[in-house]
Amino acid sequence: MRATRAIVHLGRLVQNIQAVRGRVGGERLVCMAVKADAYGHGSVRAAKAALEAGVRYLAVATVDEGILLREQGIDAPIILLSAPQPDELFDMAANDLSPLVSDRESAAGAAEAAARAGKRLQVHLKVDTGMGRIGVSPEDAADLAVFAASQAPLVYAGTATHLAVADSTAEADIAFTKTQLALFGKTLAAIRQAGVDPGIVHAANSGGVLLHEDSWFDMVRPGIVLYGYSPLGKAGDAGAAALGIKPLDIKPVMELRSKIAFIKKVKKGETVSYGRLWTAPEDTWIATIPLGYADGLPRALADFSVRIRDSFYPLVGRVCMDQCMVSLGRETDIGRWEEVTIFGGSAAGASDIAERTGTIPYEITCNINHRVPRVYQD
Ligand SMILES: *Cc1c(COP(=O)(O)O)cnc(C)c1O
Image (cartoon, rainbow, N blue to C red):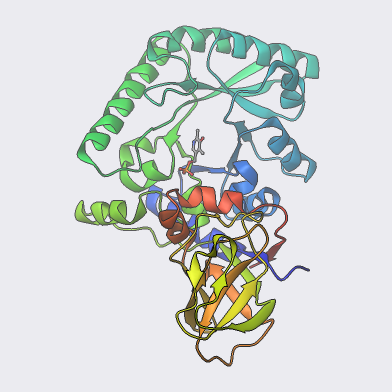
């Protein structure tokens, strides 16, 4: 195996699930987002561990992601979060992937595909209360609910919306989320009034789980908190604490590790890596790590330290496609093939890398790609 690998701590995933279930109440359904290969953690192993830990529903973005789970023997309900194109509808229905229905065309397409596949397919109505992505407008929701419920090959299983700023503690964002939830509440009433049972009602992503109890309804739909990161960021976590909201006891599930593949001493004044951005201020031992932007470590990463034994050592010079360099200082007894932790475990978090590169931890773990073998641990 390559020296560079992602250790996936399934035991921590289970603990994070327990933390979320503790927060929202054990009787409330949990639908875990396992799209994008479970945010880079490996959807099949993550889903199987989660289902054993009491998660009842899974959510994917694409039909192919859902088929992969079915092929690996997972028979839990799977919700398809993104809109499939017409030539994917048959496979969607044949594999019992429940679409979010946003208009008559998507409802009729699902019904037709379900009939062809000889299935009764569960669908959820998606209401756009302010995300501006997919979903039926609140005014048209009751009509569409009646239409979907009248399709014999469909089972009207649930009603959902998605929150745009549930992970923010800014006053205006909290107010916007309350507006979305109020609109959703009115829409649910209209659907009931039209004679349709809205089924399982769900809205909360991780931000909703953390900050908005009134978004929990029958089922919560978290992703990132289950993988061990707060969607609030450092400032948001502080804001939540100021609002008297207890942090969740969660731990990063992914630990990115590698080994020192080469060590050499560079002389004072010599430079390291492309662009010669780093000059040795004194004679310095430099370790080369076989990990680069082609593995998903952002090329823009700077001002960052990795952990070797119990100390932190700075990345120096530009991250290359397949390698990066670390300064071990003027003198060192660290040797070739020693372990290096880049993030997770007792090193920095994917959130620290995200902060330094202008993104969010979701993108960091998602981008650790298939060139990096996953090693599963309990
Ligand atoms: C990705 C996604 C989620 C989970 O979001 P997190 O912020 O990771 O908790 C929930 N619902 C929908 C519709 C999504 O697309």
